[in-house]
Length: 292
Image (cartoon, rainbow, N blue to C red; front, top):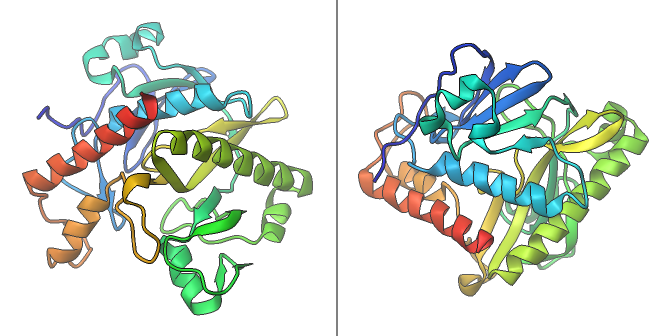
């Protein structure tokens, strides 16, 4: 297995941010976003990464940006390292496949979440109140059930800690009524288009989140799109309502950590090679199946 890329330096470019996965560099009116192989769980970055994870996240974003651009414009300029600034080309061996040159946007301060199935925190809330993020749902639904129709459940964009649910009225207050309606409608359209395509590949898109920015007065899809980091994907062949489903993401890492005795505070335990390898194969599988 190849070594994981845990950090990237681009001498000559200003670093704007370093997140749990991504590195962001600035060049004039554009940004270079690089997805490393870092992996976090319970808000803690692990010491080991998942080899190839950043490449999967980048390639899937590029794939979906192209596929969905008839619904919404996006910020991608190119994913071709050879067409990027010299500072990136000098690190081509590291950056290739995991880098995007994108337009700089004014980011909208709302995480646009769409849920098509009852899972995760939504299932926990439904059991207690019969709602998901305040949206009332029919009684009698089981865990992992498909919802009668996808629902828009936006959250805040927290710089630290967890995003918090927002009502639609709160979104309207934050960005204005017209923009709020456009965010909702675009998010639902993008989700449905993604879900329909994924289902044709034997994959269920349980939920996802989108990020938008503004450019010249219009909303533009930003950050990433329908990746295993921003979405919950299930295998249609093994899907069975009434229980949790195996996801094509880092759930394998979280599951192992839950049984490791770790208190979920830094420093994290070292991940076993078998867990890393299994997670890497899951990321590779979702990419291959969706992009086939």
